[in-house]
Length: 267
Ligand SMILES: O=P(O)(O)OC[C@@H](O)[C@@H](O)c1c[nH]c2ccccc12
Image (tube, rainbow, N blue to C red):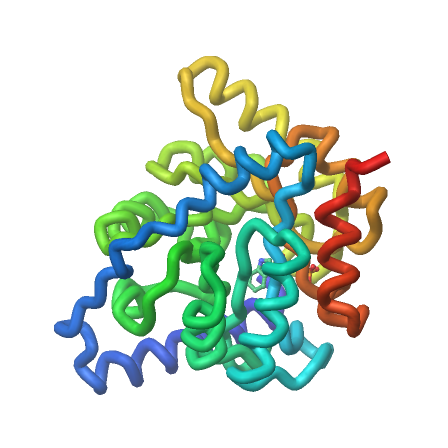
């Protein structure tokens, strides 16, 4: 794997060690019971002819600062995203490489009523006890054969898992878990390169699997989408939702840019 992802994982291992010394393993937190159901919300958006946009509160990506975001800003940004019709809000909580924070997520979740995704590198179950969120990201390429167990554990803690894949092997692994939601990351974590064709290649494999097994996964195309045409392309290919961070944050017009993507299918 590439240096950046290795660095992110080692930095996450240190965070996990700190959590362990704080003995938070015993203070198991369950997500609060008022369920913000993203699967139902995505279906509803689609029925309205709108694009289900998961809009991301993202201060930076590795080596690229986007915008300083403190908890107060995070709530304001998320609130504009909600007004513009976003179906859910993703909040980076990884501190070192993405400049995120758990305080940003707490502040967002208090302010808005949409489902909130915790965007972080989850490698140990103790991280489930850190903070409440509606969804939690599990990255197949990082968890490897721990993916199934971590998915079960996330569900038992009351989280909706979003299992992220980037290639066919990771997808096969993901489809063996109990997740209802598959995220197809167009960004290759090993070199950070973007290729929207990743979504187009993997969607048919999910659809085939679902047809054969009588299942219905919700598919989210993630990363690297900037324009109305980008979004139209992945939706036409069968994506149920899109996850967009950089282009919304960088635009400086959170409401207008989110709305533009939500309305991408309007004539
Ligand atoms: O900023 P973008 O290219 O619109 O991408 C958003 C989101 O998909 C991206 O932040 C992301 C996808 N998977 C991740 C895993 C960890 C951290 C971040 C991510």
